[in-house]
Amino acid sequence: MELISNFLTVNSAWIGLGLLIGLITLFALEKFPPVIVAVASAALTLILGYLPREDMEQVFANPAPITIAAMFILSGALVRTGVVEAVASAASRRTKRFPRLSIVEIFSGTFFASALVNNTPVVIILIPVIRQIARVARVSAKFLLIPLSYLSIMGGTLTLIGTSTNLLVDGIAQREGEPAFGIFELTQVGLIAAAAGIAFLLIAGRYMLPVETNGESDSEDASPLEKRYLTELLVEARSPLIGTRYAELPLLSRAGISLTGLRRGHAIHRKIADDALIAAGDRILLAADQTELFSLADTLGDAIGVANAPSHLPKEQLRIVQASIAPTHPALGRRLSEIPFLAKTRARILGVSRSRHLAGPTLSDVKLRAADHLLIQGGPDCIRAIESNVNLIDIAEPEARPFRRLKAPIAILTMLGIIGLASIGVWSIEMLAITGVAVVLLARCIDPEEAWRSIDGNVIVLIFGMLAFGVGLQQAGTVDLIVGAAMPYIAMLSPLFLLIAIYTLTSLLTETVTNNAVAVIMTAIVLSVAENLGIDPRPLLFAVMFAASASFATPIGYQTNTIVYAAGNYRFADFLKIGVPMNIVVGLATCVAIDWLVWR
Image (tube, rainbow, N blue to C red; front, side, top):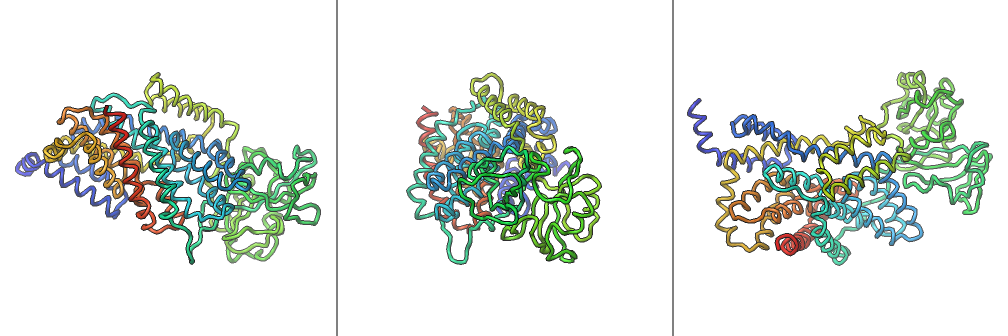
C-alpha cells in the first residue's frame, strides 16, 4: 500500500496529465453525459489524494456557480413575466409590413438581449418568430436559424453576465487573487469581435449558409416548439372589446396568438375586414401556444374555451391538465361539445391541438380523432373524474404557466438595477444577483418551484466537478508540468501571437468539449503561464473567455447551436462550412482587439 502511495505521489504530475487526456477524450466521444464525466473525474482526484478535503470544501465557496444559478433564475423571471415574449411579439407584429427589416430588428434584439440574460430561452422563444418572418419574407428558415444562434453567442460575450463561462473564469481568477472583472469590461473587445463576425455573415452568409433543399422542410410543423391549440373567445355582453376593430384586437399583439376566424351566429368568417367591429355574442377563433392559452384562461375565465356550464369555483381551486384522446374512445368522430364528460362534469375545454395542422372549423365543432391533445380546466372533482377516465391517455399537469405580465416592470427593474450597481462597483456581482433573486421571488415574478426549474442543474454540477478537477490538477503538479513544457516556445512569442495561441487552443477544445470544462482547465493554465512570464494575466483571461464562448464550428459546441441544429433539420457539415471560417475571423479580430485595448 505504501508502495502504491509513493508511486502516486512521485508521478502525480504525469498521472494528472493522463487524467486530463482521458477527460478530454471522454468529453469528445460523448459516451457519457458531460456532467457524469466531470463528477467522476473530480471523484478520481479525491480518491488518488490529489484533492485534499480542505481544497474540496473551498471549491464550494467559489462565487461563480452561485452567481450563474442566480442569473438563471433572473432570466427565468424575465421569461415568466413575458418580457422576452413581448420583444418577440413586437418583432412579429412588423413582419407583414416590413419582413426584411424585421429580420434585422429580431437579430439586433437577439444580440443585445443575450448580453443581459441567458440566451438559451431567448433563442427558443424566437425560433417560431424566425420561421414566421422567413415565410413572409420568402426565404428559407435554414438560412436564418444559424445566424440567430451565432448572434446570441456573440451577444453573450459583451458583458460579464452574458455567459456562464465569463462568470466562471472571473470566479476562478478571483480565487487566485486577481481583481474582479467589471460587468462591462469585456464590451469594447466584444463589440469589435461581433462586428467582424457580423460582417463575415453578411458577406459570406449568402454563399455558405444552407437553404431548404428538395426533400427537406422547414415548415412550422417541423418544430415541437410551435404546437398551437385551437380555442375560441366568447365576447360577452359587457366585454370592453365590443366596438373594437378586429385589426386592433389587443391579443393579436402577442407572438403566441393568431386570429383564425370569427363565428357570428351560425356563420363562420375566415376573412375578416380590417374595419370589422367586435360585437356581443361573437366567438373569436384563435390559435394559441400553451403558455398564451393559459394566460387567456387566467385573465378571461369562462369566456375562453367551451363548457356545458360555468364552474362557479374560485380561480385558486381550478386546475388545468392535458390529455390525449385514446384510439378506443367511444366519441371518436363526434363533435367536441358532445363528448360525455363535458355533460357529466363542469370541465372546460380550453383548446385542442392536432398533429401537423389546426383542427376546426371551431372548437365546439371539432370532430374528435385519436391522439387529439386537449387542455382541460376544472375543479378537484372534475380533474379526478378525468384522471380516472380510461378513454383519455397521457393525462398530466402541463409545465407551462400563464405569463405574469403585471410583474414585468419589477423583473426588468431588478435586472437593470443589478447591471447598474455592478457597473459602478457598489457591490459584487454575486451579492447583487442573490439579492435580485430575493426580489423577484418576494414580488412573485416567479414561483420558487419555477425558479429552481429554471436553473440548469447539469451546468451547475458540471462546473463544481470541473472546479474540483482543476484544483486537483494544480495540486498534482500537472498544470506546472504543461506550462513548463510549453514555456520555451511561449517565451519566444510576441503578446499578439501568445493571445492567438491561447485563443486557438481554447477554441479547438471548446468545439469538442463542453465550454465550461475548457474554461476551468485553460484558466488554470494561463494564470500559471502569466506567472512564469511575469506578465499581466488579464489579457490571457480575456482570450479564454471569448474563445470558450465563441463556438461556431459544430452544433455541439454551444447549447444554442444544438437547439437550432434540431429545429432547422441541419446536417453537421452545415455548421462546419460556415462555422470554421467564422471561428477564424472572430478569433483574429478578438486577439487583435485584446492586444490593442487591454494589453497596451
